[in-house]
Structure formats: structure tokens, C-alpha cells
Image (cartoon, rainbow, N blue to C red; front, side, top):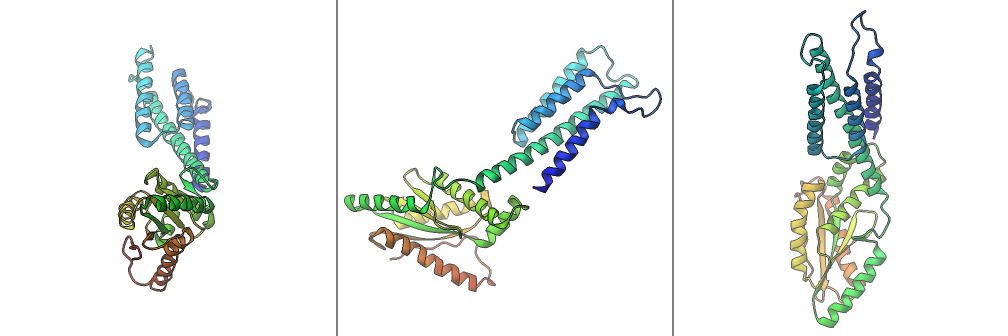
Length: 294
């Protein structure tokens, strides 16, 4: 992110100015003499807000703590606080602390966002909770065999991220990265969200590079899987800013083999996607849902 460079540059310039401000002879006999305790607090504050990852609310609490420590040092100090020229020194120190907190926290936030983006983009295949396609095929065969033995239903949903919402989310995420990396970032975030918000017995897999996912729901009929995905659609749009469409195939109503399950779930979704692309000029609903074949 280009903004990180500016944040780092401004922070370095500010800290350089702050810790060398007494070297500037603004006017004869009018040097700025900040207290030694202030410099110690400022250095500790810069280190704290640079090194410790903290959300905005925690940042406010930590800022209040820094101000409280500064107040205590002023109270126990023998130097006057608001008498004569010292009141300007006190105001300068307080403002300098707040500027230090703001700049170092912004650098910390920028680095954290960058680290999160790189981690998401570079996630290896087979991450816990998100399977690759080969692992999913093996899981489907296993669950299909169990469903046959126990005469239980099983459903498989093919899910596709809506391209228009994906592009919008990409611009919000990391605008300066390449489009391919941005797509990978959004897809990984979406897959991880699915894996965290489905049952432990379910399986989520990244099907291909076009934003297609598979959701395997053992011992679950198609209508229940559709209900789950309809509920998740609102959560995904709220938390990730994404929309998706899906189609569900199930055993034994729709398909009897693992290959047929995948084909039934994905083929109709692809056809509907092609149709929607041809009609892109028409307004689309916020979430498009599909029912199972009967």
C-alpha cells in the first residue's frame, strides 16, 4: 500500500523533529526545554503503538493510560505545570504525545493490514477449513459411501462469488496490488468465512480460480443446505461486502455418484452465470439463490 510509505515517512520526520526540537534556537533565550520524563514517555509510547497490534478501541484506552502516566509525572514533578511559560511547555508536550500516538498507530495499522493481506493471498492449499478440489473429491466419496450405508441424505452446493460485488470489495481491500492477487485475497477471505460459519461436519473447498466453491453437507437434504446458504448470504454481504449465487444437488434425489453430484451442482450454476452475464444490463437482486434439482 502506497499509504504506508507516507505514514512511515511522516512518523520518522515527526520523531526526528520531536527528539531534536531543543536543538533549534528559535529566538535567543526562548529555547524549547521539554522535560526528561516527557522524552521517556514519548519514546515508550512510540514503541508501544508501533509494536503492539491493537484495535481502535484499545488504542483509545492505551492513549488514556499514556496521558494518565504523563499527568502523574507532572504532579510529582517540582517544575510548575501551568505557571508562566511552563503552561506552553505542558500544552506542547500533551499535543506532541497525541501526535506521536496517532502517527505510530497509523503505521501499525497499515503494517497489520498489509500483513493480513499477504497472509491471505499466500495461504497454501489445504488450509484448515478450506480444502483443495482433490481433497474435496475424496471427502465426497467418503460421505457418499456413509450416506448409502445408512440411507441418509447428503447435499453438495456449488457457490460462486458475484463478480460485481467482488470487484467492489477488491477496491476496498488493497487497491495497489495486482488484480489477480486481489481476486485471490477475496476468494480466500470468502472461503475462510464459509468454513468458520458452517458445521464441523461440513466441508468447504475452493473449486477453481473463478471464485467457485463447493460446500459438502453430510446427512443434510437440499432444502436445509439452501436455508443455510440463504442465511449466510446476508452475513457475507454484511461482513465482506460480497454477494454470491449457488446451486444445490443432493443424494439420492439428484445424483447417485460423487462425479454426478459435482457435475449437477456446478453445471447449472455455470449456465445460470452465463445467462446472467448476457443480461448484465438488467438490475440484479442483492443475493441470487437457486434451488435443488428435483
